[in-house]
Amino acid sequence: MSKIFTLLIISTFTLLTAAYASSDYELGIGNSPTPPANSKKQVNLVQGPNLSKKLMRPNTDRKGNHTPTKHTELPLLGINGDSRSYTSDLLSIMSPEGGVLTLWALNVGNWVWGYSLIDSKDFGGARIWRIFNKADGSAAIQNAKEGTCLSAYRNGVIHTYCNMEDPAQLWTFNLFDDQAVQIQNVATKQCLQTPSNQATRFFSIFLTSCVKGGKLNSDQQWFIIAPPLNAGVVFSVDGK
Image (cartoon, rainbow, N blue to C red; front, side, top):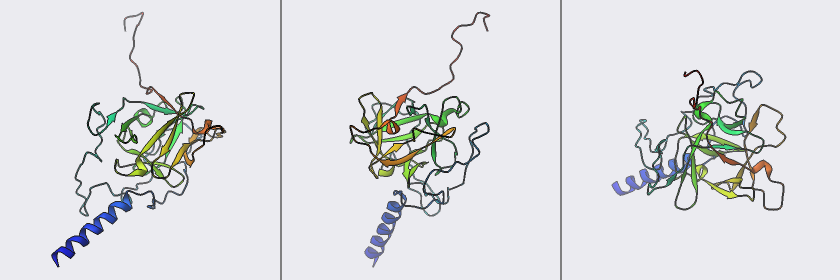
């Protein structure tokens, strides 16, 4: 009896883990990115819908007790040479039209967007990322401000609790001839895309079928750039 009970518990835990490691859960935010605020005025970061009750943090029991693991607690200040992964420096990810990937609504589970550097100047670390490469060539993309990771969800991407064992949070980078990269999701096999003919201040970020060679692909091109950090004064004529 005890063996059967133990197997039942293990099976239930496995099913729960699989359910929350999939992009099939329902967050109630729609199937495609919906702006969390009015973008016609000055753009500011917002909290967005509180989805914490719909997203179970990995390795959390029914009482809310969380057990950190190397797969779910990615250090914001990673150390290169880690046997688990190679950690990049801080960086930003920009489309050819100038939209950088950024959080807009900070609460976990909300959509990820694109904004120009000038329009998002007050976003700070929300538009800065770090890449954790795994030995198999896939990578997790972690936000520097919230410590959450980029994840496939429906027709777009959200930021959620990091879990490097969740294929929806893993990405591969396919190199274009112009040194841009195509960012492909491991779970869906789809690629990050933002429309080239954007009619709004923000850039909607979608997941679509990956463009193959020889076809127009600028809407799936992304450039890895230095992070937009505030620099100190290098030289001043008045000594201040």
